[in-house]
Image (cartoon, rainbow, N blue to C red; front, side):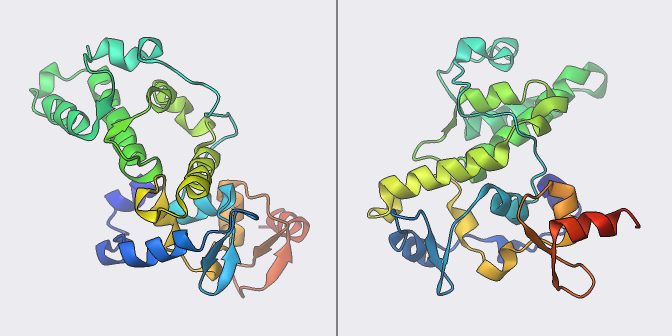
Length: 229
């Protein structure tokens, strides 16, 4: 849904820009005892559901963290003849341009699917799993090989875990922090899901917000309501 929102021009660029000063302040106030941030005067834990809401990620439950894939395990690396030990953002953009510059009749279905994979890789590298370097882990590339199964992996959980691990390690050195730190630029009130979001993203919070009058209702009430709509 994030890519779809970008494609349809639903995102306002200025509203999506990362501002270092408030992010650094939030990271410095991270409490390692309860894994919570001080955002808008409230202590907030960034969870799997929060990542889903902030970025519009509808994903499955297949774990990513324990895959630990090497370059030799990744079909994409073999198919594209990648010589580098890791694939970086410049290489991704060069490969996309190389495919798009082909004549229409020479572009194969696999070329098109590789463009989709490369765009997903670029988003992961620059937004969801940003690191101190400029390359993406082969495990993530492996998860994108079967495009129809990308949504089956638990991207939201991996993003949240990566961010929180980084906070535990770098809260006292905020400029060295990695992971999806842009997620910290959100008001605590915006992390309450609506009924529609609960349905789309398969939320597991005990309460959701009614889309019509914004009142809090239970998941059971929501499920009962959806049976008649």
